[in-house]
Length: 116
Image (cartoon, rainbow, N blue to C red):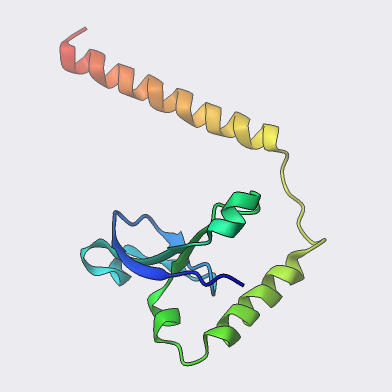
């Protein structure tokens, strides 16, 4: 199996989840916007996932990364058949409602600032 190189990158971090253990990577964990990321081009090419592998500081420091991955994988497998998800159409309607309210608030602020 092809190796995935995980490298330190500089970017704006916005609460991402560690691919390996599932923990959230908080902005406070990363100084100067340094993030450990790699790209699984084989998975991305097959369309299975986007191919981005993000690794938290705890996983980088771990003595047994395989155990952390197995623990997260077991939790994910435990979700199979247990999720009652909302319909995508309901999700999209909620997103559209928020976007509309945001657009309206921006327009009202613009009018107020312009004296209209």
